[in-house]
Image (cartoon, rainbow, N blue to C red):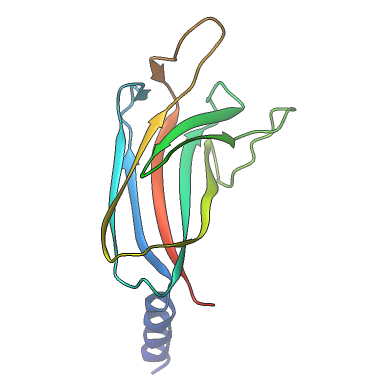
Length: 152
């Protein structure tokens, strides 16, 4: 009998989540090439709510840099810097072993005027020294987008 209650409450708990969209793009062992665009397509069904948009980055502790610069391409384009470690080299994300995960809230309480499909494109924008760009960014494993509705 206890197992039925546990299954029931687990189902209720997970079905009440507020994530309306969550998807990840995994990079192969070669890394994230500068000409590889990551495209997320998601639907908005309720325009009476506001939404938070969060990027999730999974990387290994072998990542060579303290931060990650990204171009976010939507109806308006933006460049964001995501800190992955502090100045002392301590990783800021959560995780076990040699993989860390960092969440970056880049749009809070966004309101959508129309129902329908939306598209978010992300491009790595890392530069180093005299290089115009880093052709292949190693040790970034996954990039995810989470669209969460806010019930306020």
